[in-house]
Amino acid sequence: MVKWEFIKILNYAPENSFVDYEINGKHGYFEKVNGKITQSDLDLHMNPVLIKLFDFRLVHSEKSLCKH
Image (tube, rainbow, N blue to C red; front, side):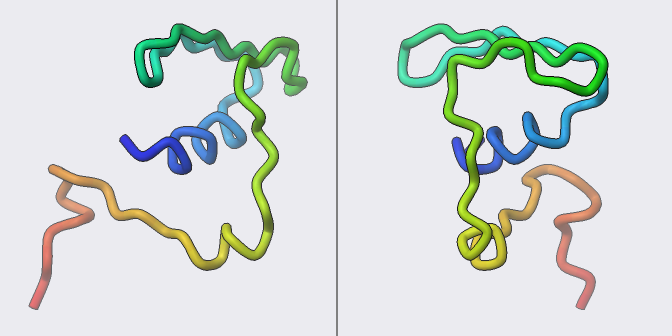
């Protein structure tokens, strides 16, 4: 998974959620309680201009299959 997409997913995580993850051999933790991020080892800030430019399709999903 692309790191950008992972951060995007974390920003839209459900109200109460947590994730243990590994990026480039480094372990990290993310936790969201009652809609507020209580712990994150990643900088979750996303540049609004880049959000409009970057959009990655899912791989191995019916949503990503070409329909034409």
